Image (cartoon, rainbow, N blue to C red):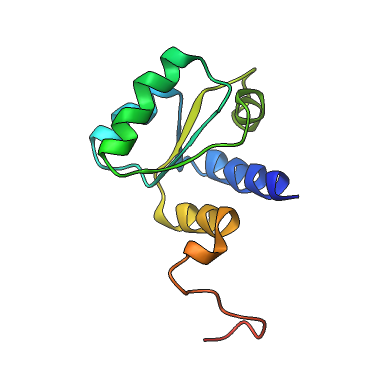
Length: 115
């Protein structure tokens, strides 16, 4: 269920052009300070992970792992991809809420939807 929601939001981001696709583009967006969140496939090659993870850590970009390279690729219309970067702040917030609602900074509106 969570994977389906993540894939759905990522798909919306792709259609809205609020994501960058692939290790090199994710690295470039991180260097430029545009990256809000990055999805890195746990099954990506060691070379790809070694290229992107240290930079993301140094730039303090949240990394979400768990979606395979095949699933990430399917979201963007490719066979597989090692990394997808989110450059839109609102989309990044929505994805963070799905992955870790407790880390949302207390912005959970509660059961009534108000606060």
